[in-house]
Length: 155
Ligand code: FES
Ligand code: FES
Image (tube, rainbow, N blue to C red; front, top):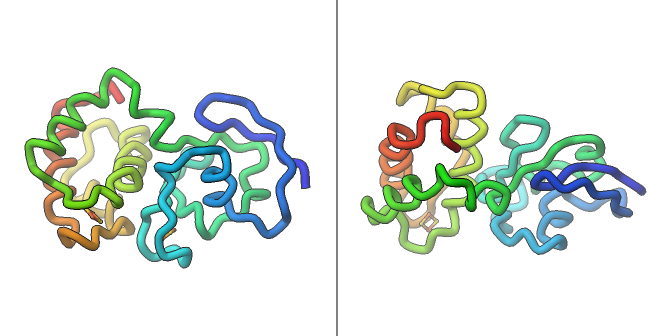
């Protein structure tokens, strides 16, 4: 099936199998930040922003992305506001393997796009679907809470 969508601000028209997931489509485009985790919508490691919402791309069909704007971590990591996020994550020594981080940051971005100054509760809610198998999510969530204070409106 032919679909037209925008991926990281680039318009694309692609032929996709009817049963292809958005996760597989994005990884086939070389967007390796979209992690292949559980494939059942439980871990959040495949999180991208689709039509303004954080979604688990492993349980969304590529054809459902027709007409939508998709953003992956590759689409935001070069933005100027990302450096404080990266530095804060490193300061907290937040991650062991880092597998969960792109998905967490995309959930955070989807929240910040709607609420520039979220409460801790709103952030924890937004990250509830992103699991970190190394640290039980404690350190990444702490680091992201700290990073948000530094990047208000820049990312
Ligand atoms: S790989 Fe998509 S939620 Fe786990
Ligand atoms: S740091 Fe390894 S899964 Fe989060």
